[in-house]
Length: 506
Image 1 (tube, helix red, strand yellow):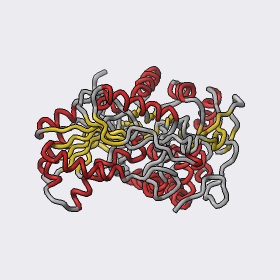
Image 2 (cartoon, one colour):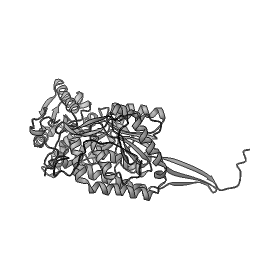
Image 3 (cartoon, helix red, strand yellow):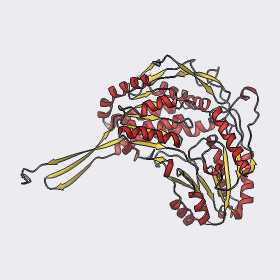
Image 4 (tube, rainbow, N blue to C red):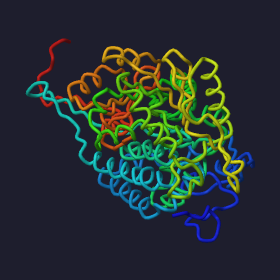
C-alpha cells in the first residue's frame, strides 16, 4: 500500500502552511515573529513552516507550565491515569495520520511507524497510567511512638528535549512518566523533525489540562540551552548525541537539578558459531538480527552497528546476511513495501559518506553499499544512502565512533573471551546483542558486556516495561519501566512522634 503525501488529495494527513508553538493549551506565534522551513527528507522539499522561537518563548511556556503544575500535581493518580489513557486512545484512533506524518517528517518507512512507533507511543502512556496507580508510599515504624512516612511528590516543571530519530516515540517516553508522576512539561522537538509532534498536539492537546504540556520549536543551540539553563525547571531530560549531553549536564549542574541523559552508542551484535548449527528458523532470525542495523536507517542510538561473527562461520553466515542486505528495498517512505527511507537531513548523509571514506582509507573492505542511490522522480534530491557494510578491525574509527546511519562495521573473533574483549572495547555502553543456542553462554555474555541493555537472541525491541539506558558515556538514568517514575519524583519524609515523652536532652 502506498499513502499519499500529507496535504495531497487522499492523504490521511492535513498540513498547514505554517504552525505555531503550543503553549498553555493554545497555539501561539513565536515572540520573534520568525519561522523556519521544515523540509521533507524524502524530497528535500518544504513541508511547512515552524516557529524559530527565542528565549522569551521558553519563558512563556514556563509561565503556563508553572500555572498548571499545582493542580496537576495534586490531582489523584486515578485522575492522571484517566488522562493518560485518553491520550493513548487518541493516538490509537489517529494511528495512520500520525504514522504518515512521522514518516514524511523523519523519512522512516511507514511500515515501521505503523507497526512500532505509534503503537509503542500509545502503549507507553497506558503503561505509566497503570504504573502510577500501583505506586505506593512507605511507612517505617522507628519505634512504638515514632513513625516515618515517605511520600512521592512531583518535581514540578520539567524540561524535555527530543531527538530527531524517534520524535513521537521519544516524546511519549518522556511525557508519559513525567505526567503520570504529576509534573508539567516544556518540550523542545528536534530542529530537523518539528512537525509530527505538533500534529500529536493537535490530536491530544484538548485532552491534557492547559499548560500540562507545552511545545516550543527553535534552533537547538539557542532554545535547548535556554530551557536547560533555566532556573524555573526542576529536571531536564535529553536524548541525543554525547557531546550535547555533556553540555546539558553542565547546564543542569549550575542549578543543581537532576538529569536523564540517553546518549550515543556503538553497540556490538555478537554471533556465536552455534547459530549456524542448523538451517532453521533460528538461523533465519539471527540473519535478520544482523540486518537490523539498517532499521530506522541506522538512526538509532542502540543501532547494532558493530557485528562480531565467530570466525568458524563467518563466510557462510555473512554470505546469507549480504544476500538479505542486498534485497532491502529503498525508496518512498510512504510505501509499505519500502524497508529503508532517507536519512533525516543532508547533514546526516554527508556525515555518513565521510565515515565510509574514512573506513576505506583505514583499509576496511567494502562488502555492500557505500554510495547514494539514484531513485529519480520526486525523490531525486532526497537524502538517501545505501545500506553499507565494511569489514575491518575494532581499532578503526568506523568501529569506534557513532555514525548514525546504515553503516555496519564487521569483524571476526576466535572465542568467547575475544568476543567479550572486542564488545567492551568502546567508550559507549548503551546496547548490545548476543546470539547463541547455548543459554549458559548467552547468559555469561549478557552479564559481562558493559551495556545498559543486552538483547539475547533478539534485537530492537522496546517494551514499556523494560528499563532502557546506558553505561559509560551512553548516558545517566533509565527511561521506560516503572523506575522512571522515581526519576520524575522526589521523596518527602514526615517523621511523626505520637508519644508524649521528651528526649530528655535539654
